[in-house]
Length: 77
Image (tube, rainbow, N blue to C red; front, side, top):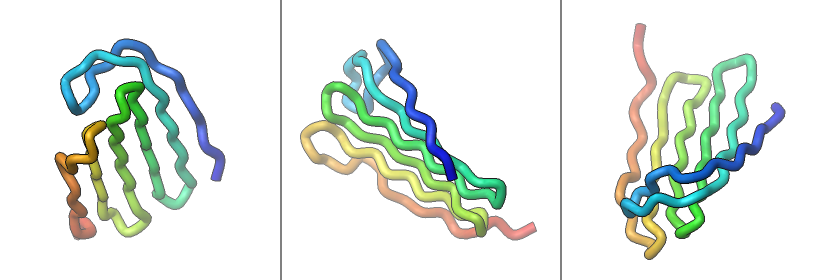
């Protein structure tokens, strides 16, 4: 699995500030996808999509307050 790091400018962080930051993404051919964002203010956002179809999302504000932390069950189809 190979990751890709991208710098970005002027995005809205979870705290509402418009800041620069860094996005890291990686995936594999079997369905795993990871997207992690770190904002200059210290806020963080992560999204993991797993092989079974479940998704985990976590958003943490720069002061440590967890704004969202949830994991969905696998999709049935």
